[in-house]
Length: 505
Image 1 (tube, rainbow, N blue to C red):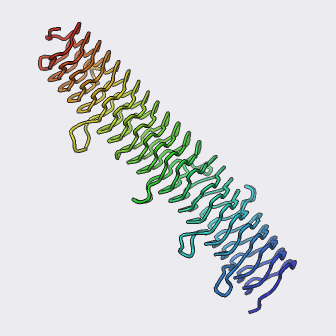
Image 2 (image 1 turned 45 degrees about the vertical axis):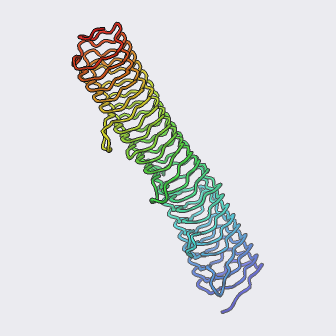
Image 3 (image 1 turned 45 degrees about the horizontal axis):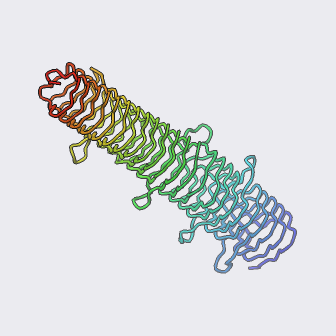
């Protein structure tokens, strides 16, 4: 087999189709309108060459034992066709391209360090179906460190385990693209068209995404981030509807600590089991999102839209900011909401069975029809509202059966409805403050209301059968038409100026 030396030559219109040029030398050659279709080019030296209108489709550049190095280092490639070419393990570092077509090219383990694979949206670089993944089993794919991919069409491309630190993504089409296991340290992303891409196990820590949208006519981007590290990731005011942030497996949870998704669309997103302490979701749209078992400790969900969201499975929302949030009908069974800020939140019809709200702030929250009963856990107690601050809340029709409200502050709460009774049956209200609260018609049967503060409170028509009000402060309270008074315990209670039929005040 002859080895040819074309170094520094000016080749115009040459047809090398189907030939064996393995080991040949084209160093600093100029190639214009040259054709390498199905040509064997293993171990060929194309360093610092200039290509114009070259067709190298189906060509094989992959090094071999006999021809160990194929290099296009610092080559300039304009309108070059590498469709279906084999560029595995080839050195393409610092190449400069314009109008390149790498459709379905095999670039596994290739070196594209600082490669310029960019263009404009009017003439996109085509990397459709190209493979940049690991080909030799060492867990490391192609090296695209600091490469530029501006406007490239990456549809169906595979970058699994590729090195992409410092890569610039701008105006790209990223549809069905696979970035599993990629390290995106210092990479930049802006103005992306995104759909069904996979970022599982990727490192996106401290990375910022801007101007991301679904393809025209689609409402969701449906991106997968399973097991990815998204620590301090920022993706504000974007479309991430349908995103999957659930764990990759039992050993690889998705890390969302410190993430900012302010104003972002996250409808139908899956956060199951995610580690998202301190996540920022202010004004985000999370309709029907799934947070089962997620850790959202100290999260900020201020004014987020959570209609139909699922917070079951013991989700951790301790210290979270949920002020002004509409949680009506949301299932928060077993959730940890201790010390959470729920000021002005709407919890109408929400399910909070076995939830922990110790120390939570529920000031002016709407709890109409909310369910704080005992759920399916091992004890017989309902939700824990110990020391909650819930002044001026609406508790009409709220079900507190078996709940623990020790030391809770429900001053000026409203729970007076004859047809939709507030139910405290068997609840523990020891030391709770319901000063000026209106519990008329409420069910207070069998409550433990020892040391209960009910100054100026109303319990007109309430059911107080077997209630324990011993040592309570009931000054100026009104129990007119309450039933079960005779079975209730008022021992040691301060009933000064109170109206309690049948009880000496």
